[in-house]
Picture (cartoon, rainbow, N blue to C red):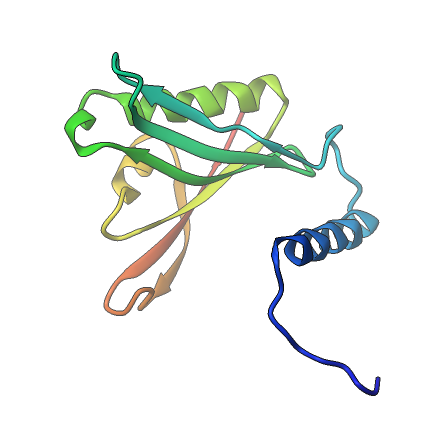
Length: 142
């Protein structure tokens, strides 16, 4: 354990760390899907081919989906695009035999939107960022 150095890592280092963590995780709980990580990203474009919304999600290891981000341009909110994107991911989840979707959102984002769409609050991180809350939500699929 002599001469160990802590230094800044790059993308290749990050990929290696994730690879090793996944390798460890799968040694404890075998994966239930063919590929360990599958990105399920969807975008919405207007007639001018401008991206006006999107959802970034990944299906990982055990037929579970994590929604990393859902964004709709302010000019396009209120027309059901967020719901359509969410349903798109949920439909993929059902087709792929996923049983759980989870995500997090802040108090200034869309907690009530997710609750309205059947997601259940299971955790709150107070003061993240300062004077705000981060909410953790889940939805079990039938």
